[in-house]
Image (cartoon, rainbow over all chains, first blue to last red; front, side, top):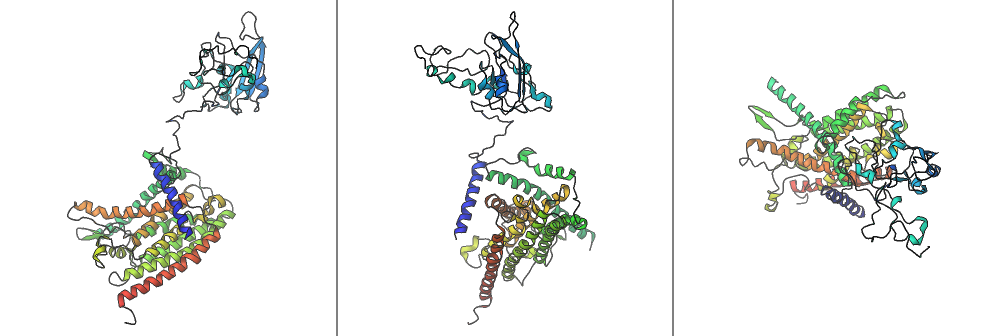
Length: 218
Length: 364
């Protein structure tokens, strides 16, 4: 009679699941466009090219992101800055910057490779287009304007959530540079891309966010 | 036959047909919804309120799809098979009384497609016909997976039909003692299940006079057999999406596939209706005549019938969500070594018991 008890046990599992689903205790589905899920803090979304608070571009056209990209979807060409009217504080700036979003695997290696934190990722992921050419994002689309506003691809879309472009991904929030203990506890990231004011985290005191503690060389 | 009589017959056939279609459309949706609930999902939710129009949308889509005919098919049988599946499916339900007969003027209206005096035999015949659809579809497709599905259908349907028939015989023998003489008419079988068991013992006067109580073993055998007979999980070896790519209907598309699909769900409902009729008293139930308006009293039997049938249909869905598919040898073992001997033994036991009650012990 073991078969029959096992059979009844099985029926109990499915029947119980049905009751719990109907009452909403075990329902796992979120009906996506109607209700948006809270994304994880380190979500990898669309890229954005940042600026310094004074409006200078952070990208120096070093092509490290293009070199490290495993999908070979980034194309960068640097150009010397005009000394009279420089676009970036360095010698060169990213003159051409293209990302093919159809190839991108959102691994964020470009973000890790960037020496100036020029390229970061946001929380926006609704990027589908009906035209393959639209999937190649150029410098105009990626670069934020001087006020820190990031251009949205579909500003007229009713699903477009402009706030998603203001939320930075995990790398910008990550740990101290080069693993130096001197930077331990020092805030090295900002919650938003762009010319932020680097507020300390709620539990942190008002310490100089960018300088390591004195007398400790790690 | 006078014109009004002809009109009543035509009307009741059409109404039964439409009822079956509507119920099937709801069943397809209900199965997806219930199985979704059992798997912590939502199920269809976009077409209409709670997604109830999903089946209509799917049907329309299939209707406008191309019906591909592969090059290697046996054309005649290939085109015949879907009709062979769907016609018996509808004919089976024509035998099931789904409401209490009532009078309009001098004419009696039975809520049933047709009340044959050989109703049960006709049902057995038609459910055997439905097997041919699967076998012929599998063979005429000229492809290996449908052929395997067809071969499986032959063995499975034949072995489970025997158990189903024997369970029916037990009910027929029992029903014969409940009134004047034996009967195979479905309407008569339901009539004999009205009332309660009060005449046996006053304690039982609130227990309805359904066949399930004396024939519980036959009911269990019948339930297992009809699940196998309609090729539903866990006995869906004929379709077996994971191993046979859809089995006998692999090579069918468009409306021809839809006909197989429709036939399967029609069969689920009609087989459940037959189980409800044979064992759960069909439309029998308290109608509170005199307390309620005549219209509601007239409708209540139909509602009882639908409730009982849907309880069994729900078991079909529940089993599908719960049990994994049987292996082929397990299926055969259960059929030949389990159900058929059990049905035979039960038939003998119940017949002997009925004989004792009817005629007394032979030695007394």
